[in-house]
Structures are given as structure tokens and as C-alpha cells.
Image (cartoon, rainbow, N blue to C red; front, side):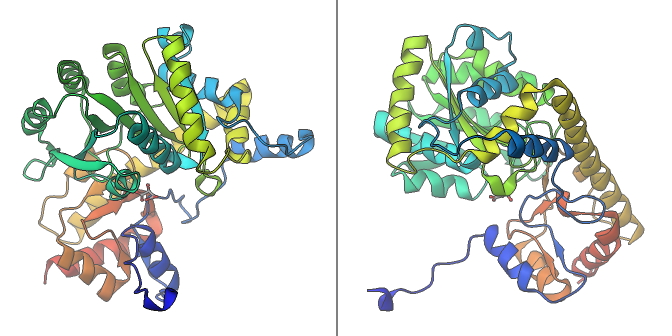
Length: 398
Ligand code: LMR
């Protein structure tokens, strides 16, 4: 049976990491996968995470299965982190949270839940979006459509075109939005734009699904939740897919969450029962370790303060790299205007480089980036910046 199989194409992002790892060039630079690098080019375990893990090893008494929806304490803490503890949604128990294997796991559980409970609903994603979004929804049998988002002329949001397209979405469809740090463009909506989207969501009776993978990487933990909270305050129902890969540096632990907001506690609980059937037939129940770390850090005031400081350090460092990148390109005599990169947010920016230029960067200089031209700014360091910018100057100059 397997003799007839031809190889599937490599994943546009994770396949790059595989190729990068095999590359023998000592100067190689990985701007592909969104992974934070410190000044030494390492992806460190956060100090708050190490401390929580040490306590967990000492305290742990069992590795019995978790519930289908995961650790209860984790679910409450996730809701507080998204909405704030005082939020009516939390106070009135109108939200339910399932712990999931990473943000991708949350998206897939959401996709299966939508396919089961809203058959025929289409999922609308931004153009461009994270390349795995369409794959996840299609794998669940859902149809995926796109709405305009990025304006290459201004390196900003094509908001008028976006809003016009949203107004034409059929009633009852699902609208996928990026909570902050839009992947791949680094261009976010402002508060008034979020508000305008809420009006369309209400008018068209859409179900918003917010992918919230970078909380804390734009401006701050609370500030970055502004868009999610504008939506949460303005619509009756909402799904949020959270990831703690980036802001806790827990990439390999696969820790995320799917949070559903409903009009009442009963409706939320009924929805959760369906989410649980989806999980049970998929991976049965989630792994404990990553979520237990997150719960411990969030619940302990000292660890939490340390973690918030570490998130700020990562955010500040990425922003420093954004500015250094623009300055170094100028020093290399690149006349093309890259100043927009310093204004964008989160791990990614759209460089505007063509697929041919991205290929030349890789072939000639072992600089790896996604073919769309997305750069993971988080992969830049003081150490690789000079080499990187010389490579870009070389490619741009022919
Ligand atoms: C990315 O977009 O690079 C990250 O979200 C990692 C991934 O899984 O693709």
C-alpha cells in the first residue's frame, strides 16, 4: 500500500526548520519559524518556568489522567488572563475553557466543534494568514474563504476593503481574527477598527474565532487583549484559541486552550459537552506538564511577577531587533524603505521580498525565511544582524 505513495510537500514553516538544521553553513540564520532567540541566539527556558517545574517535581504525587477538558485551575486562570478576573464573562461563568495541546490543538478542536455543531459554516481567514490556518480547518471538513487584510502599498491594514468583504459574509459563518501580533504581517487592528468589526459580526450573526497566540508580545499582557475584549463585550458568542508556546517559551510542551463564551452558563456548559466529545475522539485528554507550569506561574504572585518581567524582556528585545534591523540595512546602503518593520508588532513582519529574493537569500547566504516574505524578527540577534543585512543588501542589489 505504501509503495504507491509519493512524498507530500514539506510544511512551509516547519519544513524550513528541518532544512535549516541540516545546513552546514556556520553563518546560517533562521527567520522562518516563530521562535524567540535571546542575545546568544538561544531559546531559553524562562526562569519562572524553571522555578515552577522544580516545585512541581518536588510536589507531584500522581500522573493519573486529567479530565477531558484538562486542569480546572488552568481553565480559570486562562480566562482571567484573557478577560481579566473582574470581567462579567468570568463572574457570570459564561466562559468554558478546554486545555489543548498548543494553540494549533485549540484551533483544531474549535474546527471539529464547528464542523459538528454548525455544519455548512465556512471559515473566513485574513489574506494573508498563518499558512496552517486553512490546513487545520480543511482537515476538519470545513470550507475556508479569505477576506482582504494587508495593504502592501502602506504596509498597513486594508481596512476599508476588509470591512466591505466582512459585510458580504453569509450569516452564521465563522470569522477568524488574530488577537494581536498578526501572523504573518505584524500589522494589527486598532480599537476603533475592532469596534467596527464587532458591528459587522453582530449584523451578520457571525461567530468570531480569535487566534490569540502572542499575548504580551505587542505592548503588554492587558493591552494586547484589548481587541479580544472589545469583541467579547460586543457579541454574544465567541471562541478564543490561546497559545502559551511563545509568551511562556513552552514551545515543545504544547500548551494552549480553547475558550468558548456563550450567552449563559447553561449554554456554555452544553457547548463544553460537545467540545469534550471532540477531544475524547481525538486525543482523549490533554497532557499535564505544560498546563501545570502555566497554572502554577499564574497563580503564584512572585512567579507571576517574574514571568511578566520575562515577557516584557522578550517583547523589548524583539522591538530592539526591529530597530537595529532597519538601522543596519541603512548602514549597508539599502535604499528601499524598511522603516515600517520598526513600527510593526510581535514576532513577524512581511518584508516585501519576492519569493525569488527569499530563495536567493537561502541559496546564496543560508538565510531561511518563509516564501511569502515573512521574517521572524524574533530570530534576529546582535550577532547575526550584520551578516543578515549584508545578505539582504546583496540580494536586493542583484
Ligand atoms: C510560526 O508561525 O512560525 C509559529 O506559529 C510556529 C508554527 O507552528 O508555525
